[in-house]
Image (cartoon, rainbow, N blue to C red):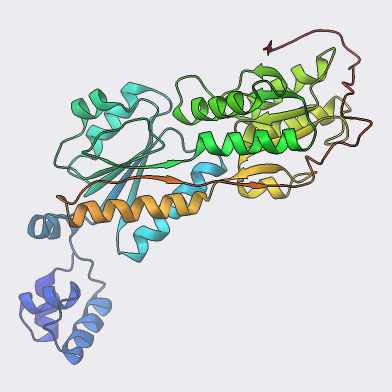
Length: 348
């Protein structure tokens, strides 16, 4: 294995000079830096990360704990984090809790000593969980969390406001009979979206609640239930786009047209939402910006640990597309019946 001593000998400089040159120190001339870089490249020298960490007490690595790694939302979130990390010369270590509290605790313990800071998005995170599993000295930023703790910077999506805005959009389009496909129980995002929907729809619409878990499969199941209702709702609002797309497929399989027979809306604006047929009306979350913003907040915590923490909420916006259009006058009070006659879902 080529060592830093080999590079120093070939370049005719000291080990300290090689170290300063490769670490970007200003007190090395440009000519010397170029010569050292050329020797290092020719010898294929790779700095020893563990040895460097002993000196700098930094791993140059950021950890991210997410509830899942499947789906476009998380791939876009990771992309945003990684773009911001690479711009700062940082590496990214990603793990998932897979919806399990013990898995989340194991992942946090495994990352300690390997990362300089943590981004945490997990439905299991509360004040006691953090106290038990996260060292107080390790900088952390919490994403989409109900935790309100002055020790941590938090970055949330405006789930409540986004769901309210979409519900009002559906009402303004003339839909007075709306089904809502919920997210998983115990999930902060899902709870806030359901709350926003309920409060905006109260006294203005007939409501059907159908259970989902943010997966396409659960959206497909809900779509089949909707297709089988004796009196179908005029519109469906899914708590995320993945479920909306699953629902879209189920409605098509049942011979129903969107939006002619049932209007459809989602939440997140994942990239594929604009390419399904018809393109999906949705609540836009700037997912990449969420990841980049979280990384930048974490770096700020790492550089200035004693600075005041922040609680930030990212605004959402409605993106109207062809899956939801204003009702014509003749359809506003018409509830189409399906071929089947099995009632499903909670109605309130």
